[in-house]
Structure formats: structure tokens, C-alpha cells
Length: 192
Image (cartoon, rainbow, N blue to C red):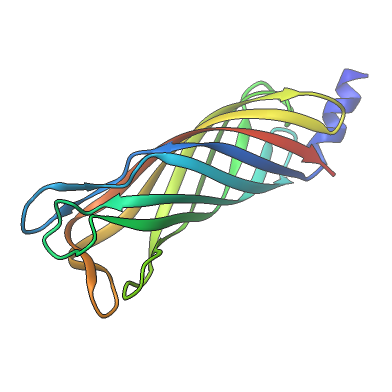
């Protein structure tokens, strides 16, 4: 019976709604050579996992964070805190270690885009390539539902020297190649 349930789960698609907390991320101001931090804050995400085989899934992943960029050390910015939306849109997958999809530990990862969008006038969004890598554990709570606990790390290729988040003015003059963030989250997965 357990083998039949595991086989059935491996052929089902899954939608997961996540809530969590994201930390990290900073830029370096080119003039003052000081870090400009992205504040830690809550995050929400959704994933669609499609079956690949008994232990692997293809994942479409969207994650969004409303936060602020502390620009008090910046040489160009007028405000000291700029509202910032950080959105990841990734295509990747997951692999379960102990066999069938839907039970136990797994690794997850993906490649895609990061949208850094300041919620302030005169500033425009930046879209940059990014990746994520994480580890999680899935606890079944019924035939078609499960609880997921995950930790993910993100890396966004900024590769910038000069104005960043500009449109009629710049939030910061930055240097750097990579912005990294990490998060922990809990999700409710439903199979269909």
C-alpha cells in the first residue's frame, strides 16, 4: 500500500505556498566604500513542481520580498531608506534523497532572474541573472498534502560599477559582482 501511494505521488504535480524570512544582501558604495544593506524581512513564495521521475521534479519558483535598502552611507541618495522589492523567478528542480517524491530530505535549486525594484519615484528596476540552491525536508500530512521546511541561498550577478537603480537619478553608485541572500521558509504543498 505504501509503495502504491509513493508511486502515485511521483506522478502528480505539486503547488506549494511558502512563508519565511530572508536575510542578507548588500551593495558597496563606490565613493565611501561602505556597505549599503538590504534589510532582513518576511518573504512569500509559490512553486509549481512537475514530475520528472520517481525522485525528481522540475520546479517553477517565484519568491517576493518587500524590504528597504539602507542608503544612509550612500553618496548619491537623498533618502536614507529606499523601499525595495526583491523578486526571484527561477526554473529548476528538486531531488529527494530517500526515494520517492513527497517524503523526506531533498535538495532544490534553480536559475533565472532577480528583479530589484525600488518603490520610489525617479528610480527604475534592475533585472539581473541569479540562482538559488537549498535543502529541505517534506513531511506528508495526508494523501495529497505535505509540509515543507526549507533553507535557500540566492546569488544575483550584479556586475556593476557606477549608477544602480537609476532613472532620472540613482539610488546608489555601487561596485561589486554578486549580491547574496539566505532564507528559511515553511510551505504547504498540495498535489493534484
